[in-house]
Amino acid sequence: MNAELSVVGSCPIIVPTLFREQYLDCLRVLTRDGDARPYLSAMQRIHGWTASFDYENLDDVIARMKACNAFERSRAQFELLFPEARAPERGQS
Image (cartoon, rainbow, N blue to C red; front, top):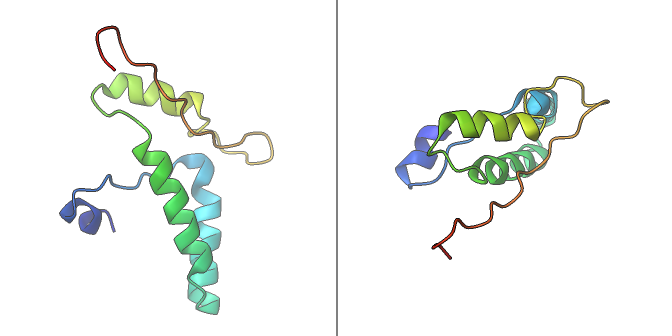
């Protein structure tokens, strides 16, 4: 999937730990019931999430993903958050 996204110049998809169970649930529905809608919806959502990060600085990406609960495991305790938009730096618009 990420190879195909790369071919068209799109951001790859990173499945965060907190989203893993949802991802696997959607795959189960796809393989057992042949219903691709939940999978496609999940991939669109997580692709948007992945594309919301600026990958120029790896340490910053990891910190921002951590702030979005990406590395948590319990969906009962945590929600996957989208990163807040960064304010432009001085001299940029």
